[in-house]
Amino acid sequence: MPALQDDFVSRVLAVVESIPPGRVMTYGDVAASLGSRAARAVGQVMAYYGSDVPWWRVIRSSGHPAQDHESRALEYFRAESTPLLWSSSGVFRVDLRAARHTP
Image 1 (cartoon, helix red, strand yellow):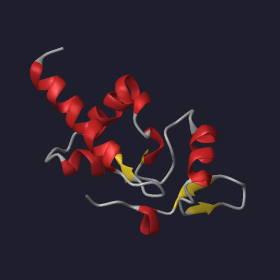
Image 2 (cartoon, one colour; image 1 turned 30 degrees about the vertical axis):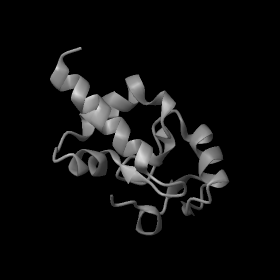
Image 3 (cartoon, one colour; image 1 turned 135 degrees about the horizontal axis):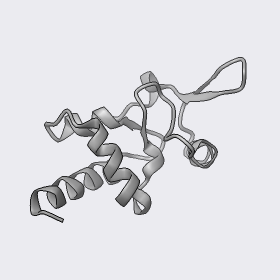
Image 4 (cartoon, helix red, strand yellow; image 1 turned 90 degrees about the vertical axis):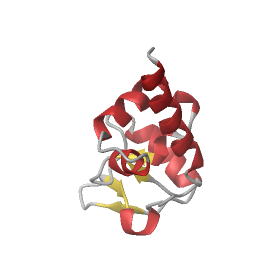
């Protein structure tokens, strides 16, 4: 992996590790905290390298957790008392107003 790419990966993972329990950041928030607009690149970092950090604390801008990881993320959100909003159809998302972390 090129050094520049490796540096981006380590910086993304460091930001994710710094998110406190019960709080979240969007992929775009993580990118912006690094002076970048590369939200999709943050998603790629999380997909390939994020299993050892609190990955559930990085969510989509809609407030929804990573696709195909909703039920596992919900377990973590409940354990950490992350503020959630529920639709009448039973779909949840994180309450970004209450839970967004700004480093």
